[in-house]
Length: 353
Image (cartoon, rainbow, N blue to C red; front, side, top):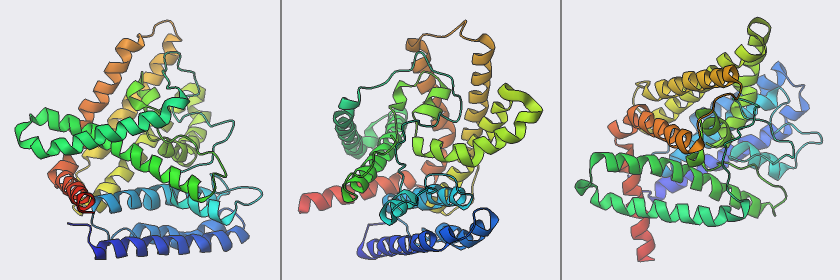
């Protein structure tokens, strides 16, 4: 479907309603004691956020809206109900910053950042990129994405596995660029009042699943799943299982919730009953990450694969299991074709202007 005038009007209406709902959240629930009373006052907005994206049909308008409102926004409101998370602040956040954090994939950067959901242990072989090169690297990624999108015109002449490789890169580059652009405009309109936590950290440099999911891939999700899922499950498990083993059910539960939220996003995009492949993808990675954490603790640094080996193995495992379980629901229901057509419409529009 083309991004026509009616779709854009619907998109704007959705976001005006979302902002209006957050005005209520800023003014009313903050005056109600935290816990169940505040949760009950926020519940209508949480339910409303599940409904708001339903009228949207284009991938590039619906996708970010679903992710921002249904997942990140609702999880932040759940934390806010119990006076936790990025919206809970003393003194209260300014209105514009409260709205931005609640509705968009940003968190203010703190000096003592919370460790990732999978471990507080350091990763000796972890590789990082010089912060001064981030903007150049982001521009290069945008160029790569443009090349991939252009290559789709010749997909009939390309091998199926080449196309699947393009899709894997497209998912990563598309999500990172959308989040980065969102963060830039938020900082611009707010006058660069605060530093924003990084949203990605070069996941292709990951040396383990623990490193990939906890420290590199979509860190907005990591930061929201820790206080909503990981910490409570670990706290419940700690008296029974002890410090080490309580981490394992917490890790697995975190991945299960992530899988279910992806399943919900897929439902919004396809409007067909779930087939649970994407949930199985995250459950598989949850089990593998939990096993990896346990093995690392057992060997206690006595054995470690060199990053030249562990890095390619990690990325290959994520890519292969992604093609096997993450992408099929998208491909089966034509979401990829729809997204490519929307890119073509945008390119033709830009050429004609």
